[in-house]
Image (cartoon, rainbow, N blue to C red; front, top):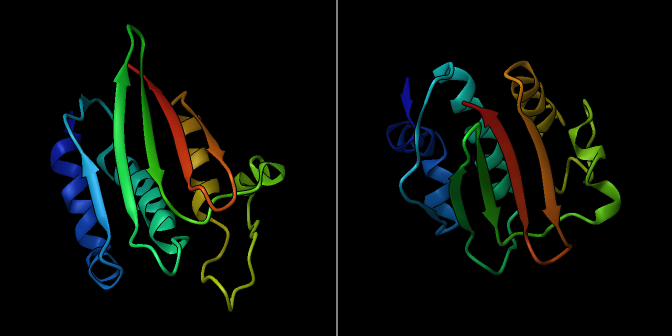
Length: 146
């Protein structure tokens, strides 16, 4: 059993240098305690929050909001940001292995993060998707069964 209110601060420590450098604000309240491998859940949050920080606007401090709604059979999480956003044509492509939307000189990375998150969720009978518009930020949603 993992209390996500305890796990998330641990994940944020990993990103603390970038959070401080960009004056980012990360908000979350009342996340559930779930049955899941801690390292898998940490990797999901690490990749999604890391991307929200990486793809932030240069002139606006990142604002990232993590939330969860609960149904009878599952949890639905969201990680929202006020970053550069993603054109709808690429909403599916970003989850493919080694897929990058930007030049490496513009944004670092390997194109593995979201495909790893998707694989972790699939292995746990969950799913992930994104809602986003260019210049208006992104919200990544993912589900996990109870």
